[in-house]
Length: 226
Image (cartoon, rainbow, N blue to C red):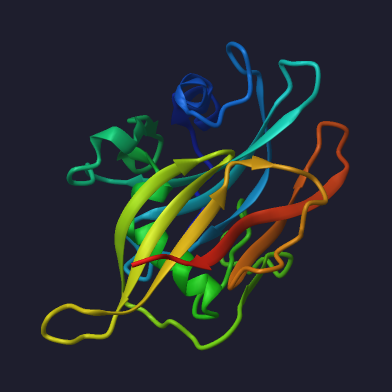
């Protein structure tokens, strides 16, 4: 399981996201955000090489707070052909320089998110080592679509990012046994938990600025057209 280091990150995650969020099409603010950490969870990379963090930050700069869901990956070297998804290269007090990516473009995060939805990965507490987080609920309906999977496409949608994956069946021609869209919610709405008509989902909680604990949909799963 991933080890959470009690150390510095320079610039910090909030500083990185303060610069990055306004460049995203689903950002609802009108200027520079004022961010606070609001929650989230982690997943483990089976190889222990990539940090995987489903982070929630709340922008309190406007008339009403807006909570954003930002999946992140932390790597010890650049991810090939992913410059467009790079958020920053901070210095970690223990691990040295890290490359921080928008995780919807990182095949390691996407594979583990798929595993979570299929029941093959366990969500972990965001800030405590070796501690499962039972408040994160993942579900999938119908016939299972087991891994391994291939990240096929990433596209922005209103208030969300659509990640298309092919589940591979190991055949010589690389044919897929199923194609799914993992729609990653970017703008979280407290209490919105309607997942009717979807094949699966991930729901979890976060905190509002007044410390109220709320829940919402982090990810929904649908069949993707071929």
